[in-house]
Amino acid sequence: MNIARTLAVARKETRQIIRDSRSLYLALGIPVMLMILFGYALSLDVDNIPLAVWDQERTPASREFIDRLTSSGYFTVVLRTESYQPIVQAIDKNEANMGLVIPFDFSRNLKRGRPTSVQAVVDGSDSTRAGLAIVYLETIVATFEDDLRKQALTSQSVQQRINPPVEPRVRLLYNPELQSRNNIVPGLIAIIMMVIAALLTSLTIVRERELGTLEQLISTPLKPNELILGKLIPYFVLGYVDLLMTYVMGQYVFNVPFRGSLLLMFFVSGIFLIGALSLGFFISVVASNQFFATQVALLGTFLPSFLLSGFVFPISNMPDILQIVTYIIPARHFVTVLRAIYLKGVGVEAVLVPFLMLVFFAVFLTFLATVKLKKSLR
Image (cartoon, rainbow, N blue to C red; front, side, top):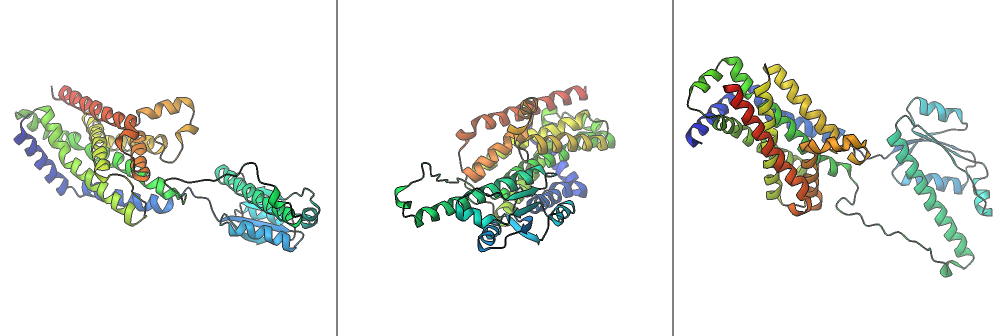
């Protein structure tokens, strides 16, 4: 490999990027836009669930029960009514996600130690939100029952003689506030890098072919590996600029904690970038025109990376066949490594398998792009 020829190709490609404002917009504008859009708009936290209440009893006990719900932060009372029908209408109009009916004998049954029922009407059209609302309600009801039981035992002076058989002591690691943003931002960096890297390099060869300059390059002593390396160097630098921008935004805009090694993150990201850039280069070699190349690069990277990487949807919840397919998605392994470095602060030994998968993809995709380019130049 001739270093001078390789650097000459890199300088030519850099000038082309600077002249083409679309490339700079793709490289620098879209990552910032995606970080702002996803960072602020995409949240998996479910709180302030709109609640419609029909308190038939209106006693201190029923009011205390409602206060327990609202003070938890998970529920917000948006409607207090005197009948059942307004609750259904509020759910139909999406003004409430849950309706609660407290019976007229609520406190009387509690005082006598009898079972009492509180009816909850839940909007099941959003299954995720409905499921979490039910879990929140059951947890608050269980706490309310436990407090009442302790009060009754205390009044009978037997509290000191009875200890609960199982007392959970939960310790949350890595994300004690359970902020979904802390989980989303590292995964978002992987998605952005995958899409941008493949999009940018998907135009490199097909653009030369459309402009008629590819024949001039072929007529020079330039070798295929020198052409690939020279073409990829400027985009590799741009990829690192994107990584730095998204890292800074994650730290100082979204306040996502970073507990790992910055050097390790940049090293692993470099390996991932090589694979993503080579994939885009391969698309550029086989594509017939620039429009087709950008469409293939966008659809072939964004959708699999977004849906099958575990970024939003847990892979363990997918069908078995899709879980197997996810192993050939490079973003899946990069998301795993980034989250481990970001939130857990672990070293490469803790994520050795996904790290080796990234190395494999980088080598394989680079080899594939080189072979395809050699065939196309013959």
